[in-house]
Amino acid sequence: MIKSMTGYGKSEQTIDSLNVTVEIKSVNHRYFEFSARVPREYGFLEEKLKKYCNSLITRGKVECYVSVEDLEEREMEVNVNETLAAGYVKALKELSERFALKDDISAVTLSRYPDVITLHKTSDDEERIWNAVKTVAETAVSKFIEMRETEGSKLRGDILSRADYIIECVEFIESRSPETVREYNEKLKQRMKELLGDASVDEQRLLNEAAIYADKIAVDEETVRLRSHISQLREFMNSSEAIGRKLDFLVQEINREANTIGSKAQDVDIAKKVIAIKAEVEKIREQVQNIE
Figure 1: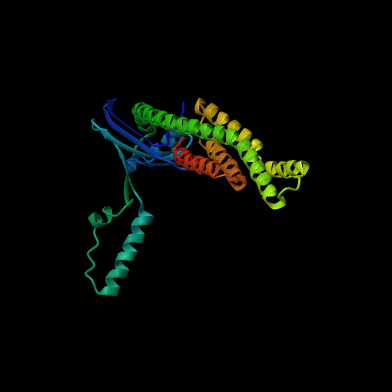
Figure 2: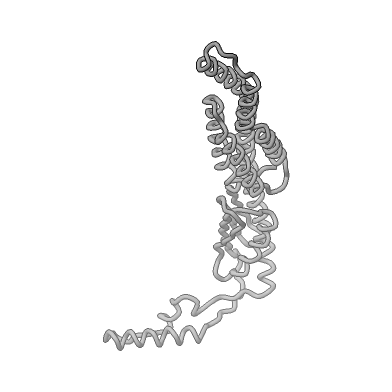
């Protein structure tokens, strides 16, 4: 199923005396990019969440927010980063001397600086917390993917509709192209009669000129390739794999064929259809940018 790279999911549950909230959202991105905001004391969760999400999400800029509230009183290990504290003390003393400030450094003052004092959970706590967070994350990610699939279904319908219109334009070009050759032949014959008057017109020369013109404006190969590309596009729309990058390449090929037809077009009606095709291709390209 086609998935959009835009999605959102949220879940909040209480598991094993832990009140856990997981919120996940994403926007389009060329690759998989992950960032998480987790409580400082549970920093180990970020890498685990990244690995879990990447197993289900292949593309997109994914942001994850996690909050964990322990509803029970549990022992925690308090760690003091003495090296960092010493650095703060030195810096504060230098500031005091430089600007003639009162030197009133206290333990309370130091404790307020980032990472001087940290709380540490035991390995047993880490396992317990991860199990709870993963359970909640599974629900949030499930909602997230469901939204991506819903959006993807809308993108699929829009792209297929535009692909159908491109084929209509191709059919017109295929039917109109031979007519332009006949019209050119008639105009050439009329011009020769006007120039030569009663003298006989060299039919063979007319045929040769018409053949050269027909070869010059021939777009059979381009329309065949266009049909092939659109057929492949439709196949991709039914794929269960991540096909965003493949679609991006395919759209470039469709646009290339349209440009070639446009450069050969000697007819106003064909030129109009080429412009219409390119307009649809550009709209498809915009939609493809948001497909996983």
